[in-house]
Length: 98
Image (cartoon, rainbow, N blue to C red; front, side, top):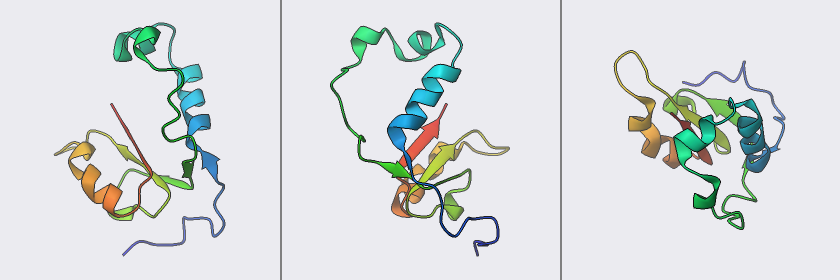
């Protein structure tokens, strides 16, 4: 059972686009192009997810609540991406992975 003690009762609502901007600012120069290709490969007009709002983040697919960003990262025995479908079914609005 998921404990409510660590979750705020009224979580902040953060637009997914603003989290994307934070990742771009935090990445070392040149790494994004190395990881994802040249900027020409990205459609700047793509607004997919423009209205998506994140209300929480979790590393556990079993603790996902509607509105969460699920961080699908490598674990001791398996990679979190293996649980992406379960996280989406539980209400995750975005998945962050390596």
